[in-house]
Length: 284
Image 1 (cartoon, rainbow, N blue to C red):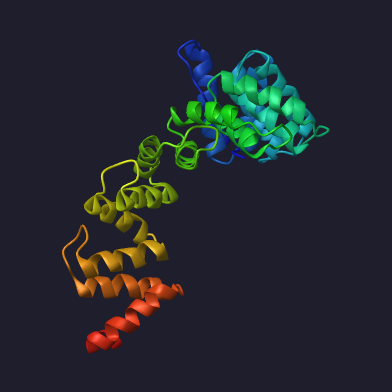
Image 2 (cartoon, rainbow, N blue to C red):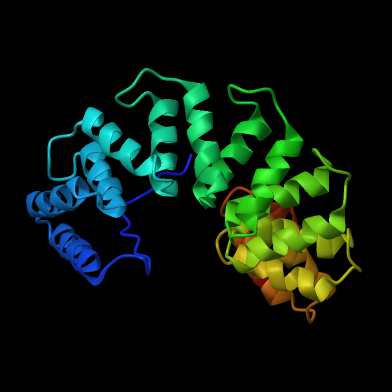
């Protein structure tokens, strides 16, 4: 599950004075002056500043520079959550889900996550997607998982984009559609999500949901291979050997197979053995 970290969230509705108070707290926090940050936030929180309430709750929840106090965290989160603050609602959901400072209560966790998600919290939307996808303390429901993942993905959540690709490729909760799967994988790949990048390359390589395109497959496989994915390294070796989407190059094939073999990729090692028999330079 995703955990909300310290973030001061300003809006134009805040007065300049209120913004100045939060900036002072943020500066003190960043400089390790946690007690000062707490004092600033506490004054603002008692005066009804929602964002001070959320961040004060965070400090109490995590015990950053001050004694950890879940009861106080819960108090301030509830203050802000009742005013429809999505971060506070999410954090309450997390506390109820994990039993931090309260009796573990999945029903309340779900309720707070849903309130937060409906307030456009991408973290809550993603978590709800996971909860319904896996059937965690609720009946498994791929349709609801699809709904929440889509909302999170539309806010550029990379993991949600990847999960949607999986759902459309495998037909979980939707009709199989490799073309839509490819679109979601590409969005996640452009956000540097490696599993999505590998799957995208494979769809282009196999021509699933798109015209077979070895050039694009090689492009995306290389991005994964450069991050150490042994299977992508092996496939690229094969592509360089045969000239699929790239110019034939035995040396490049050797290099990629060697990297994969270092990770105990059996097929890569076998390909190196064959290349060694054909070219003595590859026996080094």
